[in-house]
Image (cartoon, rainbow, N blue to C red; front, side, top):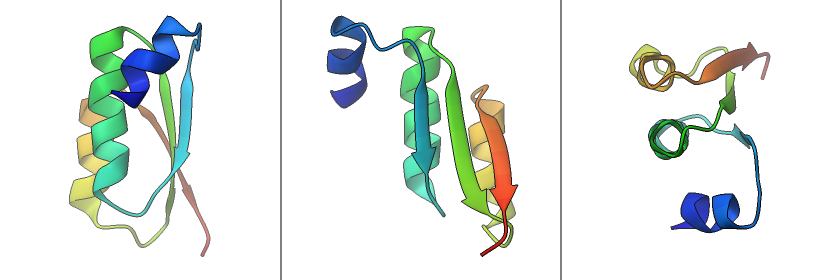
Length: 65
């Protein structure tokens, strides 16, 4: 719902910090809306969460901490 409303308001891309499932959800909804998603995750985030975001087309950046 938040992504749909943001698109209505003219948002052209999404950015989010996460260490888990929220990144995958944002990546999926952004992909469905045809908008890019940029997800920042800690280096030690579970590999499955990183893969999920990338599989949905999000740009994932792993950061220290």
